[in-house]
Length: 456
Image (cartoon, rainbow, N blue to C red):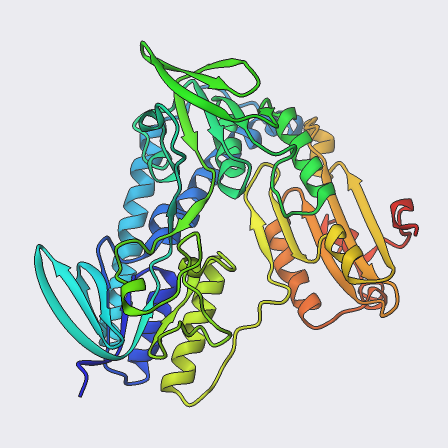
């Protein structure tokens, strides 16, 4: 007889979703966590970052207000107040997660878990080792910021520290061109910081549609962000109260803060996984099959520690699918097709389906529909920001296989469009949908002429 039906290592979004639902179905469930309950998304990622994004947008709204007749004076911004209020809300959310687990009768062990064998976990609780057994063990330990091994890296911060800076720097250099780098660059720039992004590649946001990447770069430069492409930092040197960064292009950059956002690694070190027979890929990610099972039949893994689709809703869906399968006699497999995603850059990005590059490899012939325009709000405000929207269609079936947007409200709009793609909507059905006017979203149902770039 095992102590638990399910024991989960890691109380982030995915781990909590699985364990809470299992407990709700009557399973004897427990979860261990060495930090606060809530994980990266709630405490160190999506949620606190979005608060900072909201704060930064106020600056743009204040600038736009003049064109609409508003005269606003005496405006000031206080970074410590924002951070303090953000922390208060995170405490509240942490409490909600704690109560959800308690209400589902889930035991919470405060400590770091380590796999001992296929049914045993050892939890270090304040230096005391406690061993528990479970019929099934779930690994949901997420990811952690990855830092390169270069001279002076101890002077750099990651996204964890960027959310808790005691003051706003005058200058910041951000190394990296993915979600985190681009989002924080927009936040800091809108709040008045001199921002430089350093990327190894030629363009930001590898893996996104090329037109979207170029559009966002253009808009970021328009608001004053410097982008140094095909460049790497080779050394960070302290120079008085600031830092000097040596780069591969021979230029030294002076800055007040160095922020590395060059990726996140699976948080699997020290968990005893390989010793217990679980296979890890070269980057430390846990290898799982379609049913989220590891090489050990009683041990499963979900979320970012598997390094497949590193998105919070995916981890939650995986956790819920396992709980449904095991404890509710409702077998489920997560579908990874047409997963919508957003980048809360400035402007924000929303995207679902294939990029143009992917579609050209997948289909014999495609049609591309693209619209670039100044949003209606920007006409009176004088704001020069522009929106880009794009549809990708398989010509043979007329099915819309990709939808991309960079502009205000893009994530909110794409969430709705994602339902259409999940249902296999065709371009004819998009065209037959009545527009809501005046909105930016109506462009997705009024683009009728393929662009020349779609020619074979």
